[in-house]
Image (cartoon, rainbow, N blue to C red; front, side, top):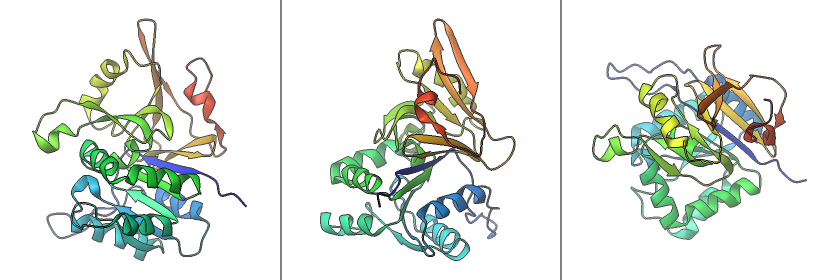
Length: 261
């Protein structure tokens, strides 16, 4: 039986990272991560964490192991592309064994550049096509889309200039994470979209879009977390809230500027 192709892209939130005072931040996206694990349809899913965008920081790996392993019952492995010199065969085996692939936040541009150089982009697309659940937050949301509104420059030069970064193109739209909490994204998105024939999807922190084959729905960690569809219509930049529903809806409607959502 063919497995569904699933993507769950999260706009932002916490999974219990270690704070400077030695305590762990509250987990704000638990309902979304529970759906990620449920979609794997296995009692103990194998989750592969890819922290390329944060330079493979060990603390992030520890947080993900604690959250998805101890709390949510997954077997957690990591793919460390910056700290380990893995062969193509080793990378392919890790990706091939995973039931879930979770990509972390950070420098999207540097992550996508390295993925393409190592051929990881092709391996991830193949994994998605065979039914591996693909998911992630911020940079780990942008990577599944055609492109994203990214703050990658701040990691290298400290610049707050936002740039368009190309993703894997599994969802043919631009995505803008952290929309409710980062005002620069709110002011920059209309500029970035002015010449685009595509729609943009904004995701607040604690909001996610779940795409299963050709259907989608919005997941929300609380009632204040929204997703919106955005595009230029003549000289007006439209932003339409996307309803949060239990049922799935054809994604073709979401990506068509003229269709009701």
